[in-house]
Image (tube, rainbow, N blue to C red):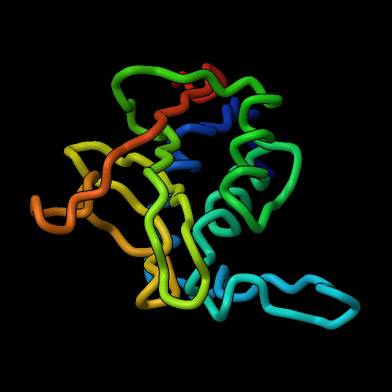
Length: 159
């Protein structure tokens, strides 16, 4: 019987992380996040309308790049900062982008969070579709542009 040769296997965390982010596009996995609000069960992400923090923190949590999964941008950003993410001027592939707050019908003003994937493109949850989509870093045209508030990077992502 032939002897099997021992193979050296090294995990490629960065490459896997980027693949998971890209493969999240179109997934309804991050659509619902439930909490008890005033003693009643409530989908705090409103069936995907407000799922950006849940989507982003879930993927980051999978790679142990944050401590937990979150339902808000502010709690996600606090966790990112405690987990070693630092503000940088220019996004690198894999960076976290936090966009300025804008107003939403019936839910008030909200920030937005997602992933930079290179070539002026990002992946984040679409409030209209209720699942992650690939889009321009500033959401496109001058008319619909959204300003970037913060870019965060963690050196654990160096490949």
